[in-house]
Length: 257
Ligand code: PEP
Image (cartoon, rainbow, N blue to C red; front, side, top):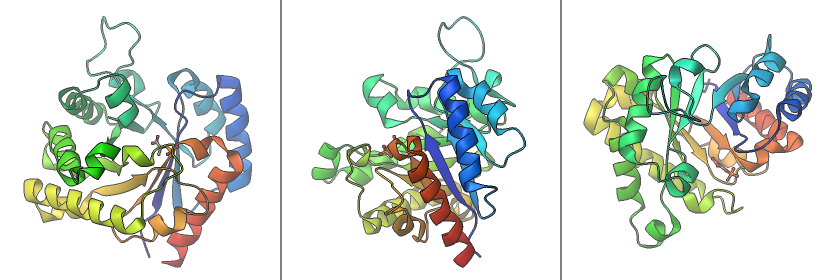
């Protein structure tokens, strides 16, 4: 049987604590206790404690959308990995919206990954090329470099536990999900970079996700891919029925495999 697919909802800058609570209670009712898919919700920081309360005793897990690149201290407005420890299990690091709009750099992203591991959080490193990179046939070069730079401070054991989300920027929030075949090639390329740097055994254990305009109708095609261990869902994770539909597809896919 295929390993449990990981379905991650990234709410981005949406939902108040009250809205988060109401959504999660409804989601729980809709999906019940998923057995063959692992569901993770990444609310904004403000709603994490409300989400934690709403999810107590359920199998849905929590993640954060970002983390500071420093340990706790004087850094106004930031949240440290140590503050998230015990509250969430996963942290998205290096999302393209942060790279592009907030100038997040590979060096900072590498530090964030190391701090996540230090504080027992599982980082989800997001990599992906822009439309320009894609059109100029630079995609592989760009994502391989984001991957190598992001992992540079980790040892092999930490690399194994890091999740990689391949998210082409041109597919995020555009309704233009890229072809499953292309995703498969890109994930294989990224895995071979890890293999060259950390060995085949490590590379085989790393979980890869696809993200970019996923919905309940196209989810199956990506979950079917050999190297793809799950999905990172943005916009449609805010639509209760759609997100529940994606989880159900993942449940079915994993159980049938
Ligand atoms: C994302 O932002 O990670 C994402 C995949 O967004 P969307 O599903 O809206 O394309």
